[in-house]
Length: 484
Image (tube, rainbow, N blue to C red; front, side):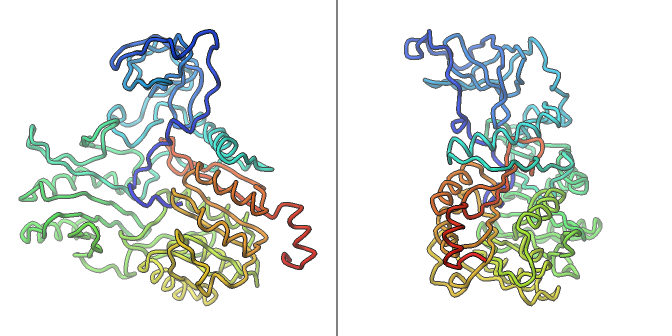
């Protein structure tokens, strides 16, 4: 489930949340409009999928309150007012929910990275499945035959990648290094980040001091941090060629900390490692239960949460159940996060990915580990791919891990392959619901589904779903010998 774009996931939008109707005795159309900044006394009814408290004003209109929890009475300050709903923040808590906890990070009130640090870990996890169920039912009119338990792991120090913003502040004449502020475009200059892997968090302060020594700080773009099992890489984006004197000192700085330093001189250019090349050719991560490893660079996509990625691949393999001799198609394969695990089980795998460098690295990783039955192919899966030779081959099972836009363009082609099982990993329940409806029309029903807490301390929701031919379609296909 890739976030092609910002490394920090955006919360789910408010509008997809289905609201129960408010009091019928008062008409919204005749109710007065509130103004931005106005404060109301409200009682919070429930938690929305994006982690905000839902209350209703005196006229039955919903008010989405950031930082509020069910059962709390709050004084809320309006931040945005619309004809049918309003948005607000907590100005004062009149009563406190037992599920409320003290946020762990000192920057939580301003930083836009986390949205649910004030919610207990149990409550944060428990809200994921109802949010997924609501999306599947309302947007796709599908309900799984069986719900899988919400997959979750350690909620702190889990991020092995991070995108840090840099901004020169004219008023203070200081360089800010951190994350975008909540509800704004400013940058919160962070001193800590307890969701970052500890090795990355420890680099924040020394990295800030290094960047402050850059002669033209306005030429600094952004910073990306990546942690592998074998080390750390820092990728610095510059809008101009690097200052040579500073670069020499930065290389020494990186060597002292045993960190790889990568520079990217243009928005669409590949990053270049300017420190000693790693022995493995890049960073490495492993999936110990599947006995596979991956070499990657800061330009490659990997899952942010290492612990959850291991659990997700284990679960995906359990659900896909690849067997020796079966043919498996892995769409949006990336480096082969699922492909190599399926091959380890004995399946013949075709892994399809749209980025040439990742296709090449995927093939290299497969060959280095002796997986002769894995083939990585390049294709734009947002377009018709039926003309490719691999697309005309037979497949027993399909696994796909599309970006947030989903995989609607692929559904007809997948259904035409007549696989006996489809495992769909999703980073956007809305597009999963849409695609599930398309699969239902193609003769597949939603057998199992479950939420995954890939980004703890946020309201972001990921999911895994299993589709199989509907009983009627299976019976008809069985007579024709399509499904084994």
